[in-house]
Image (cartoon, rainbow, N blue to C red; front, side):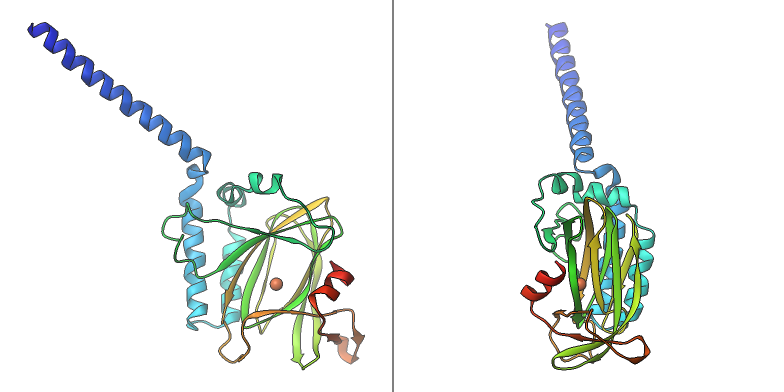
Length: 253
Ligand SMILES: [Fe+2]
């Protein structure tokens, strides 16, 4: 009788140990499936991104200072970990690439500790096929940055030197190739206009943006589509007409 009880107790203990082992293994497997083996790296990176975004949104730092901080973060990104965290392969597999322009894909950070409900920055992934573009546009009251996830692109930036009712006066600042891991940033005060064209079969860009970053700009945050191939002026400046999304997509999408 005592032996039977002992063995029953033994059995129960072993069973519980086994169940615990299985639960642990399953836990590990599912964590790995969702990229949790890289989670701490990405969690801290994204939370730091959120912190600098909050500082510029609260006007505690200037938008150009935010650009420097964002570039610092992009410079030390663990691209492989970020791709896993974004579940990039699954997202990229099913994309229906548009014939003109770039498709905006939503990015979900549900799995990131402490970020799901409090992220100050908006984010998305732009996807496009060869020859197609994130069309040329400037930004009002917004700071943003691109990070190439996959593919190669020609990236162009311009400073917005003057803002008139029907046109910008712009000055070219960047025109070069961008490979995975390379990045660029935008604010009202530096490199305000960008235009990215895919040079590989497909290209994917990670984008974050923060609104209301320039207290001196009364305009609401938003994109302003322009034609950067407008009239050439003295001193390397260009008169770039403001145009509609339909027109810019037709010309450069
Ligand atoms: Fe933009």
